[in-house]
Image: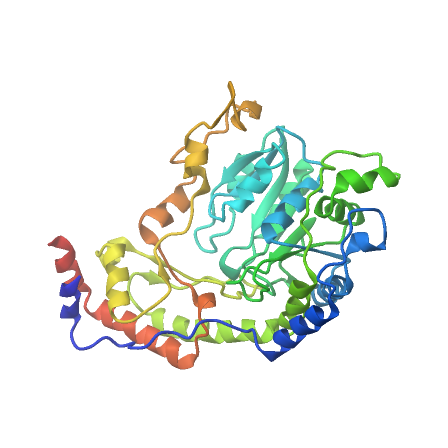
Length: 428
């Protein structure tokens, strides 16, 4: 790619972006205090006071209840664990169908498969990249039991329309707000508007403890079931009056005391972190919105965006330059954290090639609805974005400031000014 130097001059950004890291003395002191106490976990898999975990686990869950204004918060050792527990709390049975967007992380589908249920992939909205309510409608069958709405990149899914669909067909709604903690939807926090939802504390999220997560709900039944699944349900259930035993296979999804102490400190910083991401995004918006053939992030009315990712859409007809060349040109100017693709789950090998378990396939052997197909073409918007139009900057990977954002804008403007050169280069 040496010919990209034809853009002229030296590259604009000659330094590495500062890594996003909000861990400082407050987290170190909190973790050290736990270490000195010797109580790294107080969970116990029986029907006792320790069934609910230790001091820091309970403090963290109370802090989340207060911050996000929910009745119940259940900590877990990862958001993947949280998804498994949340789905299991809904009485999902083998062969039941759950509709989810194809444009999301693979754990959303694997958590459904964990209960021998069937993931049914819906397309996404072109502007927000969240699940498209119209595509949800098209995928509903007699076996549909729930909708998994993912608040992707930092923006909430369209909960009003999704709730209308759920009410009409008597479906439950699960919110995956791993990438959008603190995002608002009509004055309420994303993740708290559905039947059950939650957040991730993975190391590259807004707030983190390395790995962890939090389930939130206002439904006492769902909360209790999620707690059981988190902590060896099959052992605990025998000492309660519980009659419903569906999905009462439990796991060790318990969050430790050190991680809980760290996230307690991180939660105090969430508003500041979101504000910082929004300031950077606003500078990028102002600088990029007038460039021909590029669409800046869309934010719906009465919603806020917390920018886990800064997503862009390229108009290939106007730009006339292959996206791969655009990316390489921007990288040559020093832009870091670029990604030209995300995910189409329905095209993953696990859904394209039958995995054999003995003489039967799994989970396809459970799928009695012959209309469900995992093939190219079922999610045209997500596929189009994946193939040629999507471009993003992972701003949650870096501690970007105003100067960094202005330099990124300069890089984009330089590349766009030289698109004819890049077009010629592409033709070569």
